[in-house]
Amino acid sequence: MSALQQPLGQFLDELASSAPTPGGGGAAAVMGATGAALLSMVANLTIGKKGLEDVEAEMKDILIQSERLRSEMSAMIADDVEAFNCLMASYKLPKETEEQKTERSAAIQAALKGATEAPLACARAAAAVVRLSRRTAEIGNKNVISDAGVGVLAAQASLRSAALNVYINAPSLKDHEFATGAVHELEALLAECGESSESVYALVKSRLG
Image (cartoon, rainbow, N blue to C red; front, side, top):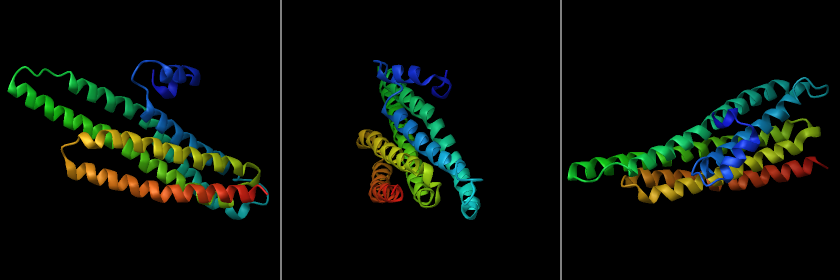
C-alpha cells in the first residue's frame, strides 16, 4: 500500500519505526504536498465568494498550479523510497571479482545520483509552492488567510528538509560537476525562499489585523 493510500496514523507509525523507509525524504515531500494543499484550500474558499469576484480568475489559475504541485509532491513520497531502496540494493551487489567491483561501484554511483536527484526535485517543487504562496496570501479570502501562512511554512520546511537529503549524498558522488551543480542550485533556492517565506509570513500576519 502506498503512503497516499494509508491512514495518516499508519504512515506516522512507519515513519517512527526502525524501518529505513519512509524517512526524512518522504516526510519532506509530505510537508510540501501539505503546503500546496493549503494554498488550494485558500483558493477554493476564495473562488465564488461574494466581494472577491475581481480575483476569481487569478485564484482559479493559482488553484491549477497548487493542485499540480500537490500531485507532484505526493508522488515524490514513493520516489524517495524507491531511490533509497535502489541505493541499498547497489551496496549489496557482489564484489568478489574485479569485474563485480567495477559493476558494483558504477551501480552505487548511479543510485547515489538518483538519491540526490529525488530530494533536489522535491526542493524545486517546494520552492514553487513558496513562490505561489505570495500571491495567494495577497489576494486570498481573509477569513482563511492564516492557512496560506501555514502553507508557506510547510513548503519552506519541505525545502530545507529536502536540502539535507541532497547534502548527505552529494559528497559521495564521483560526478563532481553534477554534485557541485546540485548543491549550488539548492543553495540558491534556500537563499531565495528563506527570505520569501519570511516575507509571506509577515504579509499574512499583517492581513490578520
